[in-house]
Image 1 (tube, rainbow, N blue to C red):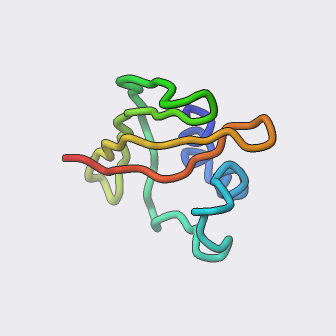
Image 2 (cartoon, rainbow, N blue to C red):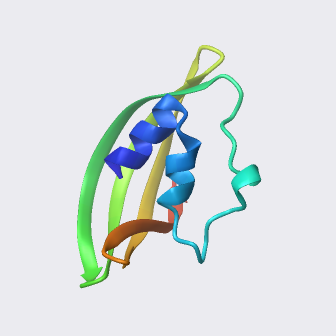
Image 3 (cartoon, one colour):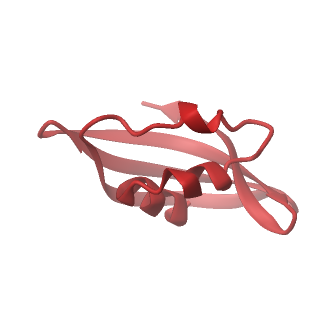
Length: 94
């Protein structure tokens, strides 16, 4: 999760795409950063294993766009594939 946040923060969308599970990831050209959006902070609230090859991470990410600050609170699901963890999907909460 932290590596994906860091990739968003520095604009490395190739890494974001490469760590997205092939079953759920968007087409490469659909993955784009919002104009002027900066990711500025990450707090991981909890994480755990659902099974041996799947898990979850609940986090809040802080961003700013045009001088306005916002947050993204999500519980993300991950799965192991070929010995590596991949982002599957997530539920965005209030």
